[in-house]
Length: 251
Image 1: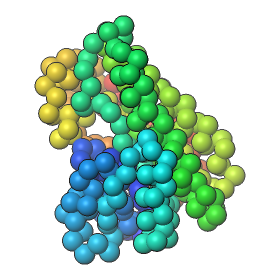
Image 2: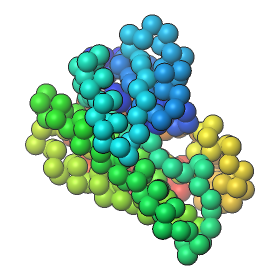
Image 3: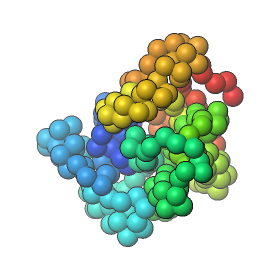
Image 4: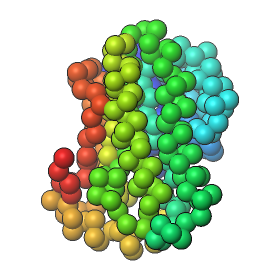
């Protein structure tokens, strides 16, 4: 129960990796808010039917007003956000093709969700974290940004920006005892990824073979890192990107 008394907001927490993060943070004793465009209330009720430790808020991470309303609701119920997991992102529904075949609108939509979203959410929770002189921001990046994965230029570029933004947050917020770190997984078999046969066919076997531990990655492989980064065990670590992909890349 190392996170007892803390409140975490997991964006995109109703399904996929986000749902796994929610479950681990609850197991660690935190109160957890599931923020998502759809399904947040249902997911929260499945995790905690009493609503005393988990509730859902409908939020669009690309909309400042929506995020502000969500944070106000959290403050009214749980005092404020102590731990932010910026997990919401576009990936599983994206189409794989060469960069010159993407339209500008497709490019900007990925950038809005994957880079503007973490900015808006971090901006919204920073005042509370500063006020209490404690906070944890965990941004979900991707090892694809370090490898330069082909045929996913908008996604890979957006995750490179997430890594850079993490470093900036670490510099700007460290004086208030707020840490900012990134978790960088590879292709992980969440329920959402398994729905995209194209991703699995194009990347699955090649990524497995690239790993030192040559097997598929599962959500359970990532939750321990989020648990660590959210806790006081990581109090003197900030601005770092932890690659959790079975040794596919060494940094």
